Length: 169
Image 1 (cartoon, rainbow, N blue to C red):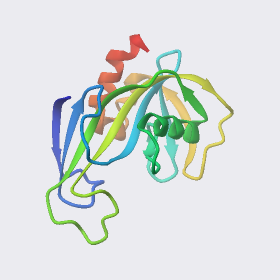
Image 2 (cartoon, one colour):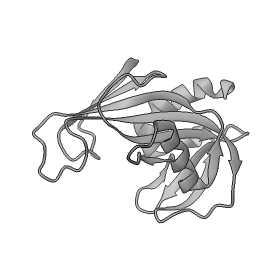
Image 3 (cartoon, rainbow, N blue to C red):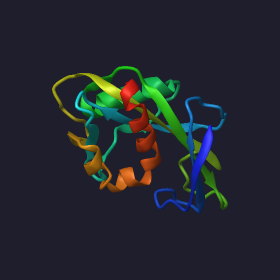
Image 4 (cartoon, helix red, strand yellow):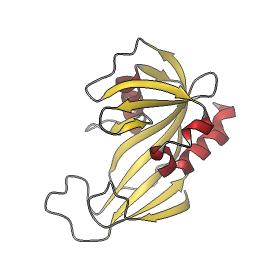
């Protein structure tokens, strides 16, 4: 794994924090992986975004169920959110989230360390879109347009890595 970026105090983490961005194709840590996220492309090399009812447009992803493997979780989230299936999944890297203060009494996430994995892949098949309780729509967008999305700007290091691998997908 290669450390490529460090950011302090991401606003979506409810305590003082440090987030390290790593690139690499292996999971080499023991702390809990809480979520998986994926950069998925169609045959025209357009990026899939899903529209969350509260957060807006983002890439597919979500929490890992108890006992579920990482790739299985990514495939489940993609299907639940967009009714799509991916071919081969490629692990791009991970975020390492570190707490820099005492644990808040209402903290519901692993503490003081946890991880989020980022994958890439091509859409292999789709069914009719029906969404779920939180996802209301989907779209495929050009890479240039995707860079205007605030969520993607936060995780652009993984988009850039996915684009390097796009030819191999």
